[in-house]
Length: 555
Image (cartoon, rainbow, N blue to C red):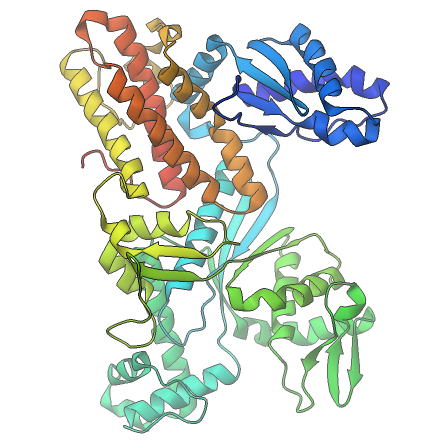
């Protein structure tokens, strides 16, 4: 992959200069795309980062480095300094073509990092078992599942979990609310009043009227867990484990965690309650209650015990995805993980709200339930693919406007349709190429490594004839795919991938409009363009798969 080779070049060529100036080379050199109006394919911003340390003008540094790199460069047509302090590289066509061949010959490994071996546990959705999943849960499910897929492709060890809050006051109220609805009574004060509770209660047999509130609570948990699991299956989100809070209680994890905190001076008694000294960790603004004065634990203690359990299972990257209402919970949880001896393990993602619209009209509630729009309702209206792509289109830190009408459009206005259409178009190109005997089989084709090169006859194809502006733009964009995945992992967000796929589709369309692909009169050029089409299709397919979105072959 060209960017891996570029970083090796940078490390080799700049090591003597960095040592001479007392600088440490970065663990990974920062590389970025170059704006369309400037010359080059990739930009190095390191001169800007070291200018203060060297007390020199960054442009002067970039000019010096450009000379050093130009002498050592292999696979690059040029290295040029650019204000205010960048070094811009232009790839040789041979390097881009070699990268394309790497992709075509082994697409399954394309993008995998050589040194990626972190151990991640991603906990997400974790909805209370008191109702169906709604929009915010859908966004969390998309973020967590897509991120897990990306991290696995990069080479990390990844597990996923859904934490089930099946203990405490909410469970008691669930049981009493279901019991009341079955007996045609109103739920108790602070109970659950939603239509989904009434509907659930009516689905249980007549003899359930005689159940105790505890029996109703356990039946309600099973019912709503199954409902949530069914929706997630339809959403193509599957967890390695559904972890119950009750499991922590059964193995005395709360008591053990409390004793650990006390022994390490992080928990103390005051006013009949037990407190966690979170303010002393420099993260939270005040200490927090772990055990109330009536001896009942707050939600905070089992959450600490759960994260301690994660650490004891060997995970060192604890990604926890929460909704916007948990923003204030992050500092105290970060302090707790620090108290457990792993201050850098906790990696929270707090995603913002989803605003549902139909064009310019805000959709405030479900017509069926009168409360909120469920994930099931959303999938029924726009489909799983549109749901997942739209949920992944924005950074978790940004509010998301989900336009129902846009998500259903079969036009270039709809981003997921646009990307899927390019995949289908390329498949149709290969079907036509097969008729003309330019390829042995149509695309896509489920062939193992080794058979792909034979079927495409890459060894005899001259790909360096791909010299048109639109062809080169696609080649460069294909090379960026591994970098995009690494950015997704660094930022813990798949939105960079949706942007990449839309860009890739946007580059393919002018290529297809301006240049004939299947041309029996020019087999050499046709085959090269078919290889470029196949590389584009493979990355669209791979990118959509990472997002949990299908890649149709016909539309």
